[in-house]
Image (cartoon, rainbow, N blue to C red; front, side, top):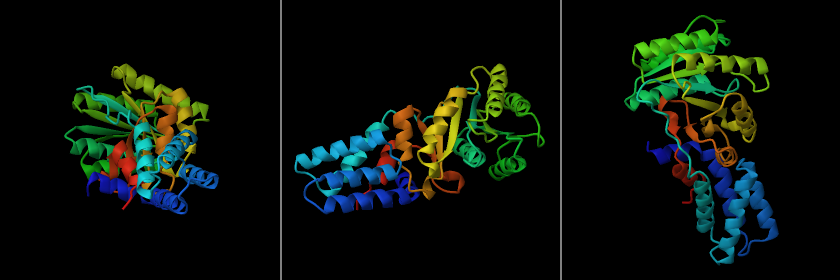
Length: 303
């Protein structure tokens, strides 16, 4: 399956809502009425596109009507262009130090960090890299077993300890092992935590200090993993996590199961944090490098 096909399939729920509703609104009148504008705004906001981007799209649609080009295909193309422009500065490349690059995956419980760690390791390996995994979620007993299963399935080494162990100690050992084995990437699966739990956030800060002492500049990437189905709440999570552990980017999971796929645009537009990867399914290769043009095209696809 090609990249656009993956985005198209994964964003089907969001696209069905956006495209069908936009077509319905545009086709009912040759002019853009105040009621049409209100309906357009409601549809775009319902996908969690965000207020600023929604206003940009509506303004561009107004201009399209004023020029006499207010046709269904044109309107979808206008919306696609606005979204693509908003995302045009996205740097979706992982840092590559030409030595060990440490990637810390953070986020709340249930966002999909452990699964993302496995899929990201698979992506790196299939791209010719040499990844390792660190099971630093020692609070959720199943997390260690889950990551170990990913490692076994993909033939990728996993550094782990027992349930209840000090996460910073596990991370310390994982960095040592990765350096000795000359790995390219170490992916650290951290415990889920709410940004409001200050003791857990301090623990995460400690983990980052420990790995920084072992490997200069680590973590070189701190990626917030967020569940797309929470929509605009992802903005709150990103804003708050970024205060404690400066983020370098985001991974948006479960985009295939929500009609709120517009939240990718809202996050990028407000926080200027690049979306590096998106989860579009259950299989290892369903974690895709984020491509703004493919994403925008899939959102506003017109047959």
